[in-house]
Amino acid sequence: MSFLMVLTVAFKALARNKMRTALTMLGMIIGVSAVITMVALGTGAQSSIETQIQAAGTNMIMVSAGNFMQGGVRMGQGNASSLTPDDAQAIRDVPGVQYVAPGVNTRGQLVAGNMNWGTQVQGTDVDLPLIRSWPMKTGAFFTPVDVATASKVAVLGSVAHEQLFGPDIDPVGQVIRINNQPFTVAGVMTSKGQSGMGQDQDDLVYVPYTTVMKKLRGITYIQNVTVSAASAADTTPTADRIATLLRTRHQIQDNNDDFMVRTMEEMASVRVQATETMTALLAGIAGVSLLVGGIGIMNIMLVSVTERTKEIGLRMAIGARGRDVLMQFLVEAVVLSLVGGSIGIGLGLGFSKGVTAWMTWPTKVSAESIAVAFLFAAMTGVFFGFYPARKAAALDPIDALRFE
Image (cartoon, rainbow, N blue to C red; front, side, top):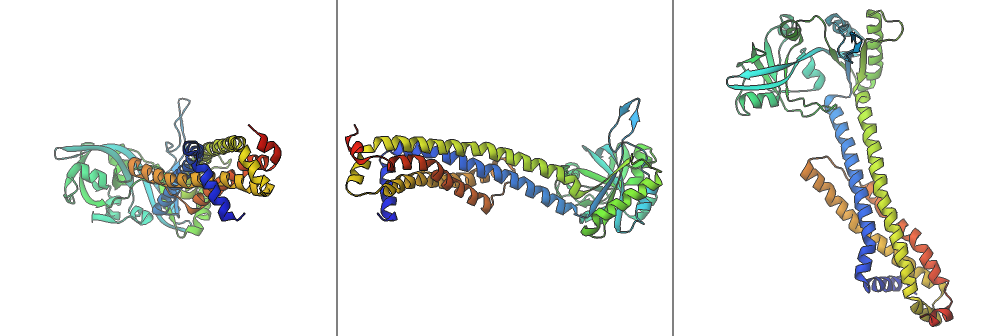
């Protein structure tokens, strides 16, 4: 019997019990669509993280102050007062360092006319736009003179700009109040979205770090230093040299650092690993549906063998060989899997686009995930269809014809 004939007979046999065939394929459809959707969510999340890292700059290094204790309470990273502007100046001379921007932050209530907005006030230096490759929308960033004199000038993020002035008004030259102190708006940054660590970079106002230190917080230390290495390949060696410098300056000998040096890859690695673990977990759970679908196919094929015992006996009596019967039932099982898998792939693609459209979650369907899902569906049909097919092929023709 030709393969085309076998395929034709398989479709006719499945069409005789449409409802049972549809319910049998349902497990395969759900399993394949769930696997594709879950993998698309995980891949999309990883791609989003990688994009954020690239946007921030793969050669960026973050130096932050360490922990300190107050009354036996550990206050956490970034709260120590051991990092100073002189440390930031010394970092500029480290081989491999291109740009340096000391930073110190605070919360502030911004007021412009009758509008107000609470946001993060980030004190930084003139190198920040160069480190982040971040162009201005209007106006200009503050100058080295502004930093040296602790001038009251501010650069608005796009969200802060829209909340205080609206999207169509140029605020350059306008005076706003930050914690009741007047600041002149020097410019507005272009929209950049979330950072690699999930922070909204547009809902900020940037002022000279010296201004935050002296006029908003009254402190003499900084909280962090943002550094750009001369090249991406030199990022890790440069970070190691910075750590060595700070240990020497802070007279640290027991590796009990009072600071933290991290590259963008290091900061994102935890999120990537967590995403990969969650993707594998969700794909594994979805894979259980494929297993259940395969068991359902085997059960239905066993029932089909029992129901068609006389048909099998008649076919073997007129010359059909055992391998022909084996091929017949095996093809039916594979057809169930492949048709169900194809529908599941279509639904998986639709669900992935739906998640992106309705919930704004990034998804990315790869050709590899589709190929693996389709191949797994075919293997499921072969694996779970082999036993019923072999059982049908082993029937004795005489006993089969006598079967009631």
